[in-house]
Length: 162
View (cartoon, rainbow, N blue to C red):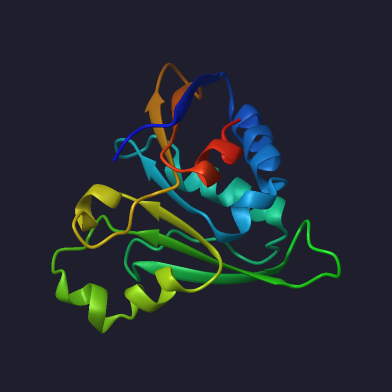
């Protein structure tokens, strides 16, 4: 897969993470994007997703799908007029081991449907996941600071670059 563009950022604090998520939430291209999140345990992948979901209007509990593999959400589309629902699926493939789970759980149908797909640990489902529009790699620095690389693989991904 070829890289169409990339951008490096540093978040000095979690507030910067929240601000970046808020900016991303306003992008029209997000409504049918596949965004993968990479980084070690504790890097802030779930924290970023939580801020993004909050910026999209999720008001209930946002939990990590580590054990369930996927958590679905439905929110009012932030940029659509008239308002319509936006389906969002938050995947965590950390415990994903068997490619048969992909079919059995209906993930192929989810990725074929309209909506935003966010995947943590995409490398664990390599070979079954479709190509991502945007990859976000998060590297922890000191305290709450993070170094990020946003990589676009599609035209939609380019529209999502910060």
